[in-house]
Image (tube, rainbow, N blue to C red):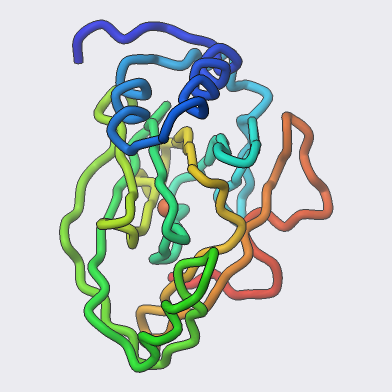
Length: 217
Ligand SMILES: [Fe+2]
C-alpha cells in the first residue's frame, strides 16, 4: 500500500475542497483518497452506532461535496441501491465490508430515467438487476467507488457477529435520495436518505436510514 499520509479529517476536507476549483473527476479524487490515512481520533465525533440500522453521520457538505462516516454494527447492510447519477468514493476505515456490484438489465418503466437532476423516477414492478462482482473492502485497503458506469451496489458488514466497521463516504454531488431495489419483488422505489448525526450532533428527529419505508433485505 506504500506510505499513506496520516491526516485529520478537517485537513482532508480542506484538501478535498481544493478539487472544487477544477472539474471533479472520479480518478483525481480517487488518487487523493488513496494517498491518505485519516486518523481514527479525528473521526470520533462522527462515529455513532445504532442497534437497528447502520448510521450515516454528516461531517461536511456544500454544493459539490458531501462527506460522512457510515458506522456498521455486525450484520448490518444496505439495500441494493443507486447513487443518483453522482460519484461516490468509499474509504474503509475500520473493520471489513462486503460490496456487491450490480448491473441494470431492464425494467418495465425505463422511460422514468428521462428526468432532470435525479437518476430515475423509479416505480417499476419488473426490474432486473444482475450481480457483476463481489469484493471485500478492508481497512487500509483500496478505496472503492461508485460512478456513472457502475452505479448500483449494496454494502454490508462482513462480520455477522463480532466486529463493527466504519467507512468514510464522499459524494459529488451530495445525494438526498436514491433508487432502492426490492430483490424479492423485483420492484424499485425512490428512497429518501437521512442523517443519524450532523456535524457531530446526533439528530434526534432524523431516523437513521429512511423515513416510513421498510428496510429491504
Ligand atoms: Fe452506496
